Amino acid sequence: MLKYKGKTNADFTYLMLHCARSASAFAREPGSLSVLDPMCGKGTTLMCALCENYNAIGVDMDAKALREAEDYLARSLKLHRVKHRRTSGALTLPWGGSARWSEYALAPDAQTMRASPLSLRLIHGDAGGLAALVRPQSCHLAICDLPYGVQHAPREGGTVSSLSRLVERVLPGCVHALKKGGAVAFAFNLNTLRRSEVSAQMERAGLEVMSHPPYDDFSHWVEQAVDRDVVIARKV
Image 1 (tube, one colour):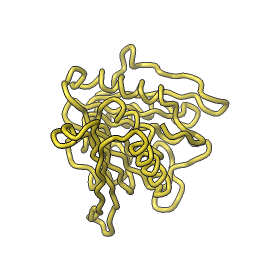
Image 2 (cartoon, rainbow, N blue to C red):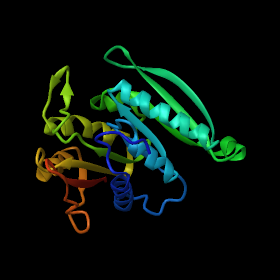
Image 3 (cartoon, helix red, strand yellow):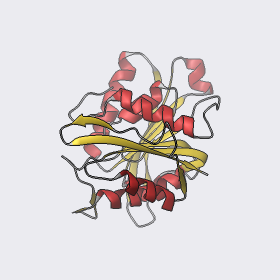
Image 4 (cartoon, one colour):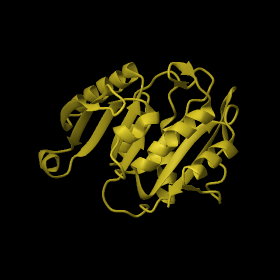
């Protein structure tokens, strides 16, 4: 895992992955799942997904963060002599312009590389436009650690936006990308965003919020300005 200031604890990311899978229709599905992080930053969720033998797709507006994630991945694959190949290109956007992407296929040996490699795709784009960036019903899980509103605030159209508005913009794209029975897990700061707000936004997007134990309360202290919680919901 790449270490950097403000990085999410990898153990917490694994918890979100495991709980989302448990809540989904794919809890006992054999083979690799596909995980989407609509605001992947420097890729903690993506790296955790690869370690769990999942395919991963990450989207972010910060080109520098994506470059750092890709550089770290490339060094790691070379260091551990993991078979891999890289491709890249651009997606034409319906509102104009394009979104650059790079994709890695990787496997422990040549035979697996030919038959069924894992994939990691990084896309430079706005999470509010996921429907144009990710194929419909292509992912089993959508995992996102939302901005906490302490050091970083969400932006829309070059101006600062509210965290509630951010959730509203991102969720439809996640639902678009999820397979039926897939699950969403969003983490957030209770000091800047209420659990009831996140749950209501998920329900409006057509998701079934998991409101029973053990999914009803993941709240915990992180630091002085951050009390974190997670809401998990399923696409029915």
